Structure formats: structure tokens, C-alpha cells
Amino acid sequence: EQDADMVLLLYRKALAMRNRKDDSEYGGAPAEEIEDNTAEVIVAKNRNGPLKTVNLAFQGMFSRFVNPS
Image (tube, rainbow, N blue to C red; front, side):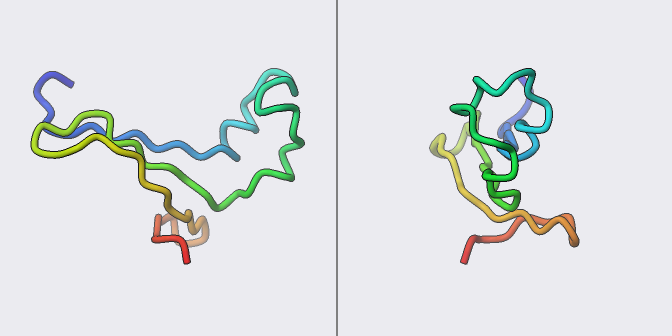
């Protein structure tokens, strides 16, 4: 990390829901109520620009992230 110019973190709520230990996380919402195709790219380190979070759509059949439409 100390040598990197950028650090990006990928977060998909649906994936986190599958790995949770109890229903108290995420307000007790059932896993099927969470959209499976949403993702966040968190810019955690950027030496040449701002830190921010970008929302994207995940297309699992192609294993890619695209702008939500």
C-alpha cells in the first residue's frame, strides 16, 4: 500500500449478505431484498486526485462493472 499511487476497494452488499453471521447486520433485511447487481468502488487512496465512492452495476454473466443506467 505504501508504494501504490491508488488503492481501490470493491464492495457488493449482496456478497456481504451471504457471508454475514446474523440478521441484525444490514437492518435484518433478508438477502433476497438486496439488489444483487449493485456495487461500490471506493477510492481509498489517490495520490493524484480525490478520494470518493463510485456506484456501479455488476454484470455477473460477463464478470464486469458498468455505469448504472
